[in-house]
Image 1 (cartoon, helix red, strand yellow):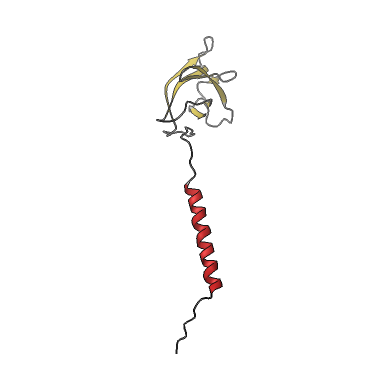
Image 2 (cartoon, helix red, strand yellow):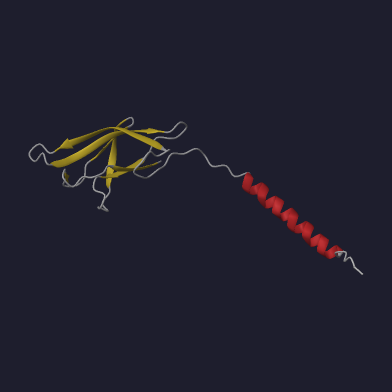
Length: 129
């Protein structure tokens, strides 16, 4: 013969409380909003910014040395212009050069002492608001 156990009122009450707390937590998490921003890092297309119009300036006395690089940074739709931009030209290097906004969306980076053109194997740009 089978006996059916009916849960106690205490167990049903605890289950109801857990359910209520779960729904409240879900509601608070769903209410979080994050403002639109632009940020990115990588060697391929990044959704936060588009880097274009890249120009390298060679040293006038030693043209095998890159004195600076300039480029245009365009934020994705709805994104803000970057406030901090850094770049590096040698993939194996851990040295990042701070860039300066020269006008509008144009930025310029001048690595200290320049970079040998033969060792420059990438242009990696990190931009943030």
